[in-house]
Length: 275
Image (cartoon, rainbow, N blue to C red):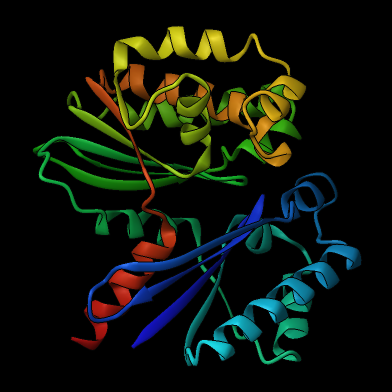
């Protein structure tokens, strides 16, 4: 039995197909669609992008149907939940037989607690396009939090607002003990590592040097020389700065990239509910 989970984010639309028996990921597809630029500059998702979203999700539906996958889930995060016209988006998708579940930032952050590791003191960090979610287990305390610090949002925000939100994050992080491993989810950290020739993890004290080198490349160089997607090349440097702030505040020892994502968290939640 298979389950398909589609993540409608601020920078891209992605799906993962999981096997319910083995828990393995059988397929992963990502396509760029920057809904966040609409929402974070105008407050709503444009008709052009609503149509693009419908077209893309209809294609996904056909893929799932061809694979005889009946258990499908469509999850929307920061861009859709912050859009003034989110009900219009929900209704437009419903007209195409797609039931959209918009989750809150708090729910999104709590899903990170489903991440499994043998490390006793760790943080799971997911820097998306519209928001930043963090789950921390410092050996004594466990907590999760969502901040309006997504990379696409920051590209379209004024510095004063961004600084205030970063200060909120730092204040929250100051509650925790030192962390052994920071697990960074998603393509932003992966892009930083790929450009630096890093496979999986680094000592945290090397992060500043890696970010400094990364920032010397233009967006064109990142795309042409390192094959970064265009929709990643402009936001990865922003995400890198957030990783620096978090790593420094938590006195992290090691930073590791993970392919785990919100879809994995949703999958684990669904499995827990039916077993």
